Length: 331
Image (cartoon, rainbow, N blue to C red; front, side, top):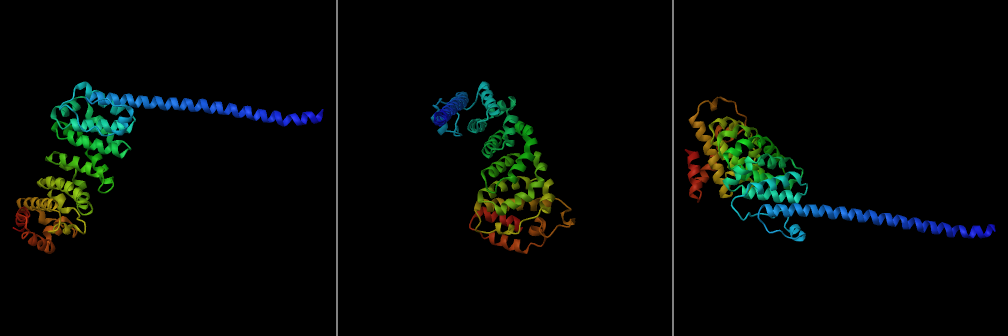
């Protein structure tokens, strides 16, 4: 009898193992089915939000597949102005959604609609400026870029600038920390250009003057042009002249005054110097300061032999506008 029991025991053990495996498989199947259902619900929720966004801006509602293929591509609003309810829906999705593509689409829509004054006012009145500006704190770089682009258009409005000026330090921080020549850095410079058009916010940018000058040497032509738009605006303000003259210039700064430099860059940097020189001529006391050797004052106006030689060559430049600005510096 003992032998019979011994022979049956492996069979019972094997059957137990198979039963256990079947139970585990059943649990796995149920868990996977639950997870698939949860994923499907999430996708359905995201699809509903996308459709809500598309309806809010008057676009045709596409299938899930078409919506996915157009992530972040909502570029044109078919109407010049948005309705109050449309803006509320878009801002609501921007605040409530964690889906990057939905947030990007909402920001692009706001940015495009902000090309029209009526929308700029409407977005401000619905507290949309703070909603968009808070996206600058997002960890996703593409969200920051699109938020910056939207704010650039929104800041064309004087009333909006007054509300958004508290974000200038954050914008400066973002673009200074951004990768050189990146889309984020360009977006930050474009927005700062709008804030530099009037003298109202110049004092908030003076500490970044050395950084701007460094970008003139390290950046691409596109970066150089964006930076020079800011520098030309700031240098037209006589109150900032001393800040500029004290600023340190990069070692390769004078290479920017070469006839081979991109014309758009060359003209703007000459205007920048003309502004500084005219401010110095109209105001007294700049010669009393002890400027460092590598300062803007020492390189351009102190004992500027190398600079004068470069300007003398530019007076003979083939472009009339370059000649004109170079001559103003020589005089």
